[in-house]
Length: 219
Image (tube, rainbow, N blue to C red; front, side, top):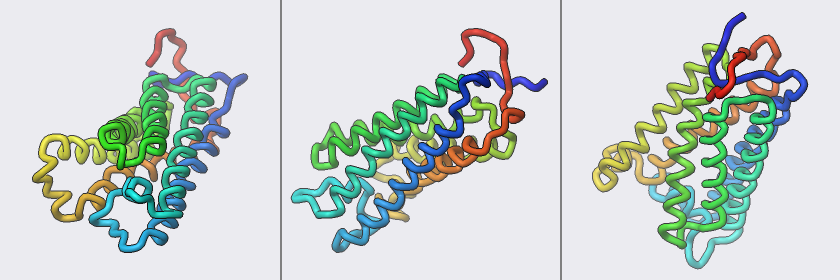
């Protein structure tokens, strides 16, 4: 029998399928809402405008503002529900904690649009940082090798971009080339797309894929 540190499978409490469905729905509806909101925002530029501009201008541009803010709140709620189900199934607490913090940050982004200033900026950083960490630590759910490789590449890519902005925000070459909005999407979209893929993985997860570790105090 193979062992994977961090995830314990409890056959009597298997909610991975339901958790996966929530992850897919939560992130997919956000993508669709963003795409629709962009079409309803006159003069919107994916290069120069950030995602939060869709819901955070004064005066608000409707229906873009409602579409964006409501969808990001829904995403946060559904991802938090998925985290709860993953934990009930014996999923890794380190991954679950990072994903839960990112989901709570998404709620904050929707409740505090970009015109609120520092509050919105704080929640945005929380989403990006802990979202990328959740992607990296998802390997501790007992994923197969291809998914582990994808999680590490995707998560590290987003995390490196976040750190590059923290070090050189004013002179970031990536933002200079793609625009602030384009660079932001290269941070956010890989994480969101991976979470959708992870959700699909969990919905079809067989019990033989789960690695069992018979130790207490696992992370």
